[in-house]
Image (tube, rainbow, N blue to C red; front, side, top):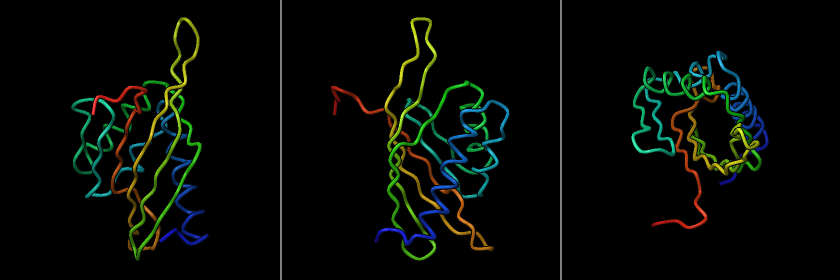
Length: 134
């Protein structure tokens, strides 16, 4: 079912903070991916992480690139202590010919910690293609 207002607000705030940190080199975005069961898949071949150490490293690497991440539409569902989200947004790339906004979709899974706070559990990233191959 769709997330209740409190869950929606808490997870939207977490996503916003994550995207802010991913857009800011040295912001320790990896700390947000520190749950022992965190894993992720980026949009590139081989962009995979399993566990807190790899997820933290992947997050910190992404932030080091100096890209601007924007979440435009966030839809959140929840059931018990698990919530998941579809995040439609973009990543702004600085090019010598001018900035380019690249569409980016994130599938996210969250779980509550012992204090009832939401934490990232999974990041699945995709760069939608105008002409998908599959």
